[in-house]
Length: 523
Ligand SMILES: [Zn+2]
Image (cartoon, rainbow, N blue to C red; front, side):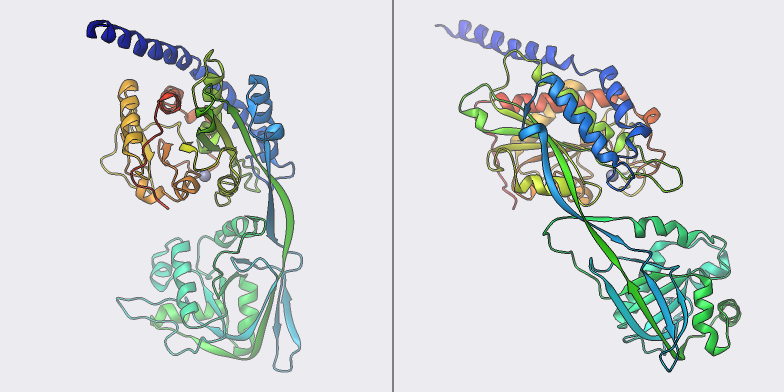
């Protein structure tokens, strides 16, 4: 055989692969993506969460399962559902109570109109003497210090929202400021910080707006250790509570605020003959979460034992309690339905790729990457034989133009051709393949989000196990985790291209002779 013939044969072989791929790529269409997303991101799904009356997350799982069955995908686990035992810890607001007691231990006032942030999963009772600490603020520049002469150790510290400066400027309260107060009180050894609206606060709804977040359920994998519990509780109370606490001193919160603002000096003091007792009651429920897992089995008898996995979380944030539904069209309706289209493309191939392709729609991402955590402990093909994880999370948006700089906390949208790839850089070969596919499809990859986002989506549990990752995203935007993350803002053309990219990379990985080279195992 001469070299010319060999070269011709080689070209034929390459073009057959290219054509096959092209044909399958055509099955990924804007129309199909849109049709799936119209359902997944509809109000019927109730925001795909665990804690709505009908858990929307289960409705979404049912939809995915029925689509897998319709396509004839091989179940990754029996019936496609990988059941995950979880524990939901919810504050029991009916039993949560704060009592004020006088010097003789008699209850002088009791209220249930409180809630707290954080704390342990079990019931929690806090008892202590009370100090009033104004705004609870320390200003580094002016040295204004509300806690200067106070002994905070073991105390329950009553403070009001905002700072002296914010109150004088009429500024909105912000959580960052309040958290700083909490950490200062914690450093001083306080048991709890009781935060109430300051009487001049124009935003009287401020504390109410935190209530939903604080009183929503907390999920964890059953048996998983609790994260670090901070030794202070942040308790949100009413102005009535503040005045009842101050009663014995003959002062009111409004009066004290005026005194502080006028003199620009702290008016903090220990409140005599008063102890406060707070019962923070929690209830624990068992919940079964579901990863939906399907496969297209590899065609090579040996290589099929290895896989490329696709992951996308299908859960989201539920409802806001005021009639608003977090439809999460971009987060992560887009990744969820893209996986359906990728699965369809692989399933439509007459000759399947050599290696197995696993599709895992994971749950509980918004609750702390729970579904992917569980999967990484119970994979359908071992982590060792998982060549790469391609994770799709928020892949449907485009900015009008490229931004000059990436601000990860505000608008960090990739442009009309841009796509962020979060990668652990464990495999140069993988990134080379990725670059090649990007070039074919006219996509411009950026890894600028990697540093800030490596722990923030489901790829993290693969990265942690040494599996090379490609985390795909078109970036954050103003609608992120808002009820405005809706279908009409999705750029389906862009989304199709990102989906085709993901298919193409996996196709190459699944068919190449050798295993992907991992040059930097990361554990
Ligand atoms: Zn999210």
